[in-house]
Amino acid sequence: MAGGGAALRAAVAAVVLAAWSAHGLYFHIGETEKRCFIEEIPDETMVIGNYRTQLWDKQSESFLPSTPGLGMHVEVKDPDGKVVLSRQYGSEGRFTFTSHTPGEHQICLHSNSTRMALFAGGKLRVHLDIQVGEHTNNYPEIAAKDKLTELQLRARQLLDQVEQIQKEQNYQRYREERFRMTSESTNQRVLWWSIAQTIILILTGIWQMRHLKSFFEAKKLV
Image 1: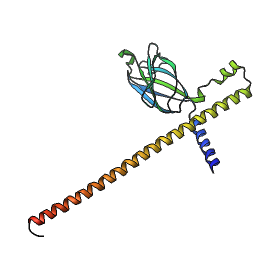
Image 2: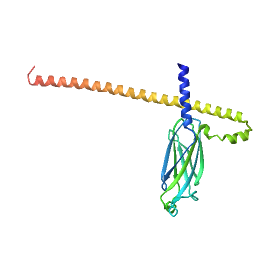
Image 3: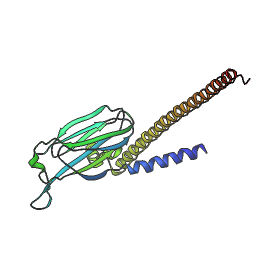
């Protein structure tokens, strides 16, 4: 059963890892508006982000293929709120960082332009593509640099995938440990609160009994 559980965890990790393949999206922002995204990343994992911007043209009523003169600021924070990356780029570019703490990393982008005329149309489209883990590797370039055969390149890819799956498993164990610690802390607080409530009820009952006894004695009923 233990071997089956390990196989199941490996399969789940492989599915999660497959979902981590390079994914792209685009979004609209206004001048100096900040847009943030959350990525759950294991430790010691490389992340590469590529972006490009398109400005809305009111005359043609379409987005321009590029936005010359526009700058974008990229900021990345780790789960502890520490700034991992904070840098200004051009209208399109690439940012890279390596995680040193497992957990949710916040990736924020916003325009650093202060020229209102640039945003006269009120729309700026940003295309963002984030690659995590072994998906950041450029295997054709690696094959050409190291002169690898197709079989050797495939073996390299499989080794990278296994390494990333191992990192993902370690991250899942880290999350389970954090969840268990939180659950134990919550249960302990609930227990102490219940004990405190019980003590308060007992003390209240004793005070009421004494008060009633004093009342009856004052009225000479006992």
